[in-house]
Length: 572
Image (tube, rainbow, N blue to C red; front, side, top):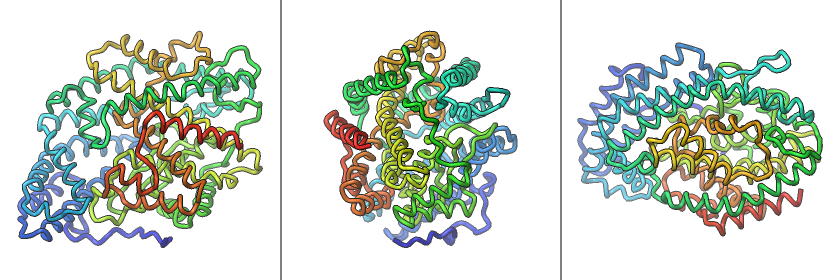
């Protein structure tokens, strides 16, 4: 594979080189030109699609930078206003014109001449978008986006003071790995109390979001927002019933394993009651793993780890570092979470995270690095739409990278025992991830199937679902009020509704990729990269097939893959 990664934007052929989409007056003429352009044959139609794609790439990258700057510094009023301006003044004006462009594509007599799979998928998505578009939903979408960013502002302002030191909740969470139990308890309660302080604000915000989302769904003639989102997200390859089957499989196949893991932890810790602050500490009494000293150390080690797999992979992260597309440290005023933001024109994405020297942070950079590699591999595909993969594929890229990089985790640790311990902890986390995905997804289904529910009903339902998918060993007595609101830390519920089941499906796919990789490293890596290069030019099952795995979430498949993870755990 060619290791050189270009950071030059492709030469623009439709939009002026000096064009910056700062306001609607500069953007509108390009949309009008696209609307007024006719087609003579399939080739002219294809070129028109490329022109449309070029414009979309420029505008989406501009919007991306607005979001990135805002999340890097939630207290910066200028950044907040720049993002709000795009959401309120530009996006709503693009939407109706985009609808007209979709109609133009649907009616084009040369459409069937572009018979490659990639165009068939594109046109299927365009037909879907055209069908559900409603003019009256444009201001609702704007209001929802503006409300959603309030979640980042509220969360970004959360800090606690422990032993006289002010820290972000992410920084405080590292104390949960401390071997001194009283310190863990103190940190857990400090974090929980701080979250609890904003529970009413977040409940009120969530209620507004539910109401607006339900209204959008009804405007588009859907019974509920869940059904609307399944269509909006182009979930052509599975249904809500498949999600329910996944929930049931996770409960029956994995919860018993959680029980056993919790019993083992309690026994090793030698405690009479396993409390929530006992879940992250090493059960044998070892101090927390520290895989890196600071963010520069994290970047260097990640590049080396990726280089060992393939020099091209390392060069992806090195290129991002060179052009300052990494913001990894945790600090006050920074939005929570982590993401890889694709930048469609330059093709080199941006990684955002809140690193505090934990194993979880190390895994996060590997995860987001998988997304970044995916972005780079698809940057030269013909159309912007071909680069934007469904999340079931995007998360396969990231979660697989966590696992296929494991053979090189010794780069992060000074001795073999720490490396083994890191692998054990991560594989245990994977087993715990699948039920958590089921919890969040099942909760969302209930929320939007019952949009008129009260806060009290939501609390009851949350606790029922949480209990069904959690171990029966952990003792929550005295902490019930905090347990009632754990869901509020899940930013997906506020910012990207229904984007969560993908983690479950992709986690299964990633385990299968890893299984193939363990059997034959080169063949496994080649299959993984071949799947990623496809972008969204094939269906989800076909992309999984390119990686030599199945798009399958049956109980039998889950059982088989979890058994493989357990067998690998036993080897450690």
